[in-house]
Length: 450
Image (spheres, rainbow, N blue to C red):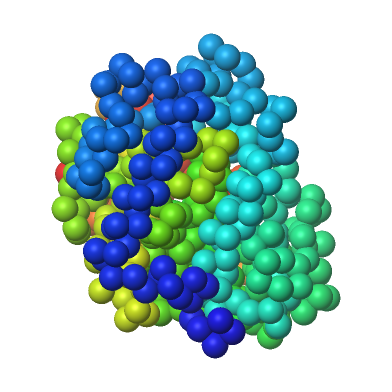
């Protein structure tokens, strides 16, 4: 396998018909497992009149009831602390992790067995190998290793591949940057926001990351990893290639990764997942090239048999042929483009955090930014607060703010953005998932797809 670009050459290059046949076999087994061992699935299958034997083709997947975060949370309330979705209780698992708590009314609690963790590491290995990481590398994982599952699986994947692993742990940014340089790390893993934060810290201390040994950055945790402007900025500041991945605590690992060919999106790990893209209102499937909400079924986690889980992620699926790498895995164009509940409506205009970031990152003098939405008098107002780099001259504010104002209005149907300058260090910094949009209205508006 050393000379292969694929971690699992047999399945990554399967033609579509054989790949779907494999998915169908795994789907039947997974539904049988869930029906036999998960109280939630046993009850829901009975309520919907569904039996695993009804799965004769992948089209029959529509017979299976969906699971939502609200369902899972409600089951935790009924049967605390782990709920009715898992197939085991705390006594049958070796680890519990929680969601990061950025959505919903509280964290989900996910249990895993030893077998689950082997699979979690295997999924990350697809990405590690696919972006060109090899046993000769040294990897630095800039992650706090807390109850949020984050890069835990990546850590074990690096060990599985044979990479020398340096866990960043809970320490300040300056110490992490120093370790990256001291250990001669060739691979760094972090969120996109934290990659920029480490670059800021290095620059403040007169350290040149471009001259370091780092060749690759593995990004995850935010849609920003597939925003071309943000990726370009990260690559410029590090002098290295950046690769996007995406996962979720509910799966336990990643479900997509960007290969070395970087086709403008991330490959879905389809031999271990079934990914649907649906209209969030009608719940009907949308065709290739149209945006919708992703619904995931994952096969490798036995303690939590996630079947048709509504993720809230916004994606646009395109065929595998879009990439010349030879994989049979379809692609999410632009990676995870955002969250269904991230979009805001301001005076009748759809506002997406991803679109704002794409524009702001074109201005290289911006150090950090924040979007604030308020209701004043009879209408909503939207303000972009920007913090400039220390060496930036205040004399250029008028020209800069006018240009930024014009570009934001042009891309948002003429919507008037107020532009405010924040003082140095005033805006929040993030290590994990960044939350740069503050909606201070009493009732934020739900998503409407154009």
